[in-house]
Length: 621
Image (tube, rainbow, N blue to C red):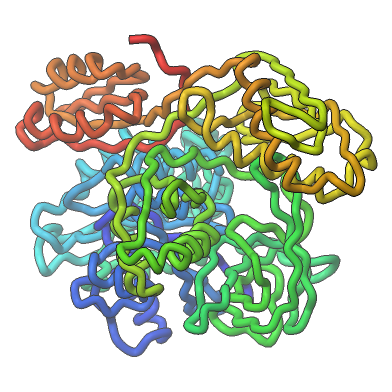
């Protein structure tokens, strides 16, 4: 049976989880419809998700439509969890981009569509909530063409839209509107439209399937997840227009771990999408991981549990997804088979917070719990801090609230989070070198000789450690003590921020057997490294957010003026009949200010969206 891995993506509250429930119910995968309001949906299975009514983690469920198995990946809609969405995109064969017929094209919708078009992922647009008051069709299609992509055409139309009696009917197979839209991206259809004869319905169907498959065209369908209208037509479009991936069981297995969850017993469950080969129970697997410093590490384990999503037999075959247990130490992003030349890049979180256990006796348990959660989402970067606290990197306040609730619910730890502050970074300015000889150094006796050179590393490399000494010149434990201490020391730079994108090279070393110990090297390394870093100097960088805001026509001038006063750099301003859309980049530390001011500047009608977009050198004030 061919399998399609389909992601449902949308701005928050557009109805992703409700659509997932409807698809599962209509195809017999569940025996009753769950409700987001009631908190009993299949995919939002965490207590926190049910209480808040939002999707926090990507979830997988399956159903069968005709002769095709469809694995549905329900992704978060809130921008704090955008990295979770982008990880899921790696393993998809196609996507359903969901819009509300009332709210229309929203900021997150535009970001998702840009990503889908960049990946050329086959995408069907589903306009939800046609039975709600205020729902639109014709002018919403115009908004989609103007603000998402011009390469769209409706495959269905709505009668009595905006009422409880709204109904969906398919458009005719030879629809001239479809032919005109396809002519923009398909040369054969363009030739037929211009020179004749008119393309036949069969030719249009073939062109529609081909252009949807290559990601250049996006069919639009209307419906209601709650009422069920238009959902059958959506499934027909997905199975008919999105091609299943080529699957081969020959050769070694190749796949990607796109989610990691804890089981009821605390064991890690890894969700693996397999592209080639086969994985069986009790098989020994070696997964590869690209570390922040560019090194490749391995995680090895034996598969003790294998649950293929949607069933399908005792083994995981190419094209399918399975939940695996037994791979201790597995993390999101680990690869089975060769690593890609360039791993997907996610902008670093820009908020840093300190977390402390309310009961001092739980400090160690808190740190262990946070490190466990960091394995599920490596971008949160948990690390030890002073006074028993743990430092965390996060995308936003909602993510902080979710983590606090998770610690209390899953680990029994009440924790206090300090208010998030924007995280600055330092990078080496130049090259600096320092050497200290044994046995006397800086007034402290260390039986060690260390020489270190600090210089800028490749952008995005994190921290790199190299040797110019002979690897056999020091015992391995001493080498490891130097390298570990270098990375730990550079968590705080000359200006109090974490140092990144550096290369530290061991240029000289020596020891005295049997007197020298690893403690000598751990004690001396920070002193030598600090001296080398001071000679190299550092530059301070601050994080930026890419933003998009939609404001009423009469609010353009005050909003742009205020953004400019906050240091924004504009990349575009486009106007329509009712609103302006402004895009640009803004220092992350000023984002909260504009979020608070925007309602007053726009009479409560402004819409704001932003996400981390990298960093820039801090400008002098």
